[in-house]
Length: 363
Image 1 (cartoon, helix red, strand yellow):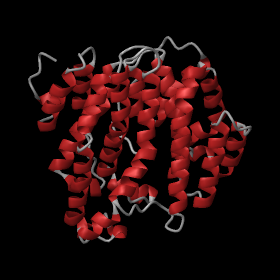
Image 2 (cartoon, one colour):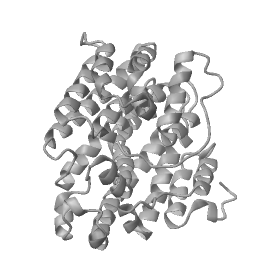
Image 3 (cartoon, rainbow, N blue to C red):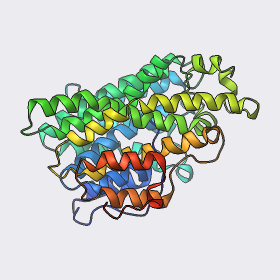
Image 4 (cartoon, one colour):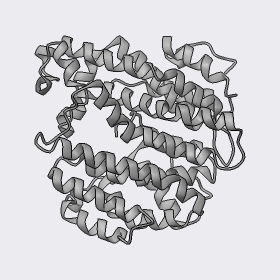
């Protein structure tokens, strides 16, 4: 799963006195400052529920992205993890950790992601302490994510990395990687009393919210995905139309033509902006849920699409395509305590210029 990149300082909420829960909050800080910002901006109990749900997704994501694991072994490991997470299966999470151990990097080279894989038993045990309705909301989407990842790993076993062929396959991958997470969030947000129309709106737009974020990350991270993970998410069909061999997607010789495919992917992401905005204006703000927690990643995606429009070729190099730290802080300040209908105005502003450069004293 690809995520919008940024780096901010922070830590788990001070009121977390349960050692395992506090550890999980620290772990999110280590593996994803982007999602850590979402967790930090939530309040309890939603902060811990989303934190645990995220870590349960991050573990299989680490396995999928591990280029040193042969595809057949990675798919088998993913399915072991799924069985261990499935309450109807007798497989223990210890079995997954034992099977993952041979693929663990040496201790001195172990990333925070792999450290979380090694602590899967602890993450799962902490999750098991959540109320039954919380576990029932989170497990099915995670199981669908895991099986989807295993399917894609097997599909591209011969290439040693993903080589998506069509726009339809791209969107299917994005569904497994992020659309499922949209439903996980929605399952949690819709617990308790909620009108039928509001519930329907949330479930109809949840997938679009996830696909927006995933497509933005795919558009902006082409170089990193290829050079670091041997994955090409830009559809081969689109690259052929642009005259770009898929295996040479980041070659300077093809940069201008490949940049048109980056633009096309960004345009596909824009088709989900309205769904994501509707999702944000419909979600209930209760049980610790906040507008800022989800409004910030949405608005940062809007800003990243703006940057991609200005310089799509940078996605094919080691230059970062992302919003500035100053804009991140401005977005965070603007969304904290803002009414839900402010999202539309903020989106419109950010589409044109970085938020911190605008006069917005009313935000």
